[in-house]
Length: 181
Image (tube, rainbow, N blue to C red; front, side, top):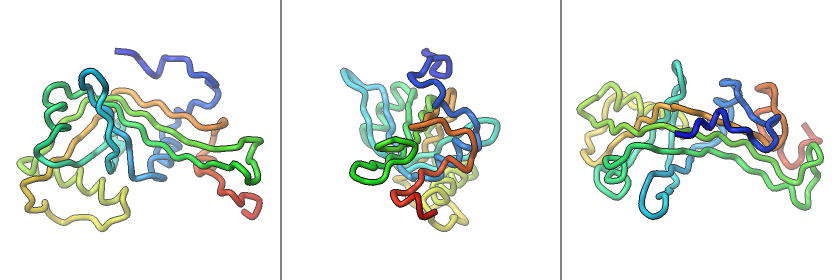
């Protein structure tokens, strides 16, 4: 497996390694693009996500009990997820001499299917999703038998920005009217 943390990025100075900055980027978005192994092309799909950061980053995603994603995960659980935020400044005032701005986090790991038969972990995953999507936390596991939670324990995490970001205060992308801040 490629160790993405060891790959030299073009503009290596833009790599983000601080977990607090990475968490701030994750908090900016509720959608990730998940890529699963399929033949002959990877299967990619946008999905809602939530996360916790314990000793390492854990993403939680949810999906139906049946379908193409479940079949692919059961065949091979390797998954890549990308969370990104992008702002186009074309025709607007530039920030740091840049015409656009982005923050991106890529997560590489294995998807584990969690069912309601593991109520504590199932509820933990659903509540991570609820929190990251601005919804109230659940007190108990929903009765739906069609719902699965995916837990992705990050084996590797890489993050990058349009320009060097060295402090959590710089994680947020300055708005188009940044000079009024």
